[in-house]
Length: 188
Image (cartoon, rainbow, N blue to C red):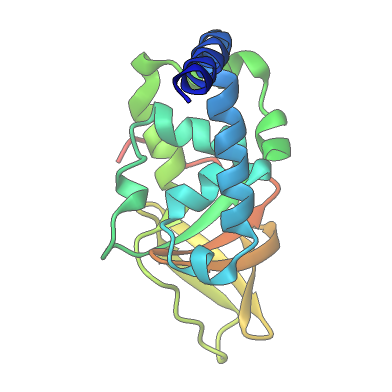
């Protein structure tokens, strides 16, 4: 019996030693598996915060990175806050010149990145009014945003069509867009 335990312990230690150099690969694999499980369950999605869904959805990896670089992970994970969020896809970020995007992601440009991200968020639910096809809302950083509505839903934001949505999560309604919205000049 002791002999069997010894060999099992040895195999376990060798396995752990082999896995340690590739820990980040295991972490990435675990993250992908956990995200797939989350995204397949509508009830879990509905009870998850905005950041968690953004971080799990493959089409939003650049946005998730931007949220982390801007130190907004906690902001968009808070319970009790509510956002209407227009989430640009990876393809939308790819339309930005790579050098410009890399510069924006640097820590010295955190405030500009925060301004860009907050321009994609309205810090409240949007209440649709069937009498008005155009709504004017204030973004989370105080800029004006124009929403076009039709058939009881938002169809465009600042002229950019909504690709899909809303995905209703614990603290937000997330709409997918195919373009990064550009805030007007001036820092708020």
